[in-house]
Image 1: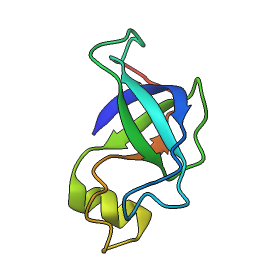
Image 2: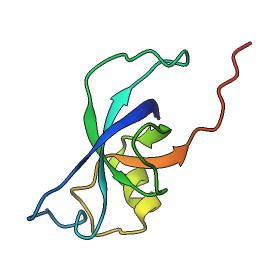
Image 3: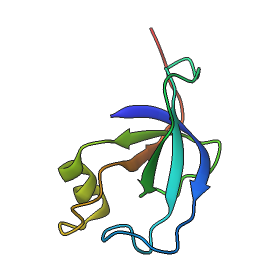
Image 4: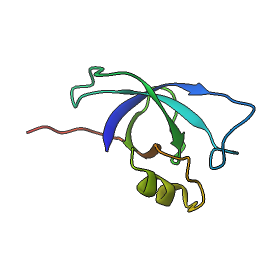
Length: 90
């Protein structure tokens, strides 16, 4: 799992199997302190996240397919699996 912040959405008129009728978000990885670390990536939204939300993403094909409940979506790699309410370090 990766922690990230939603920085935008992506629109496509033609999508691979598994991406049809799904919202695709642009995610930028962040550390627990909220500072950006790394390059942005795309993920299917499974939890109704929006721009500015801090989210948890799953980047494993089989786990991602289970979250979207589509065993035939072999092209799906990354899914937003949760919206973070709070991060507590200590």
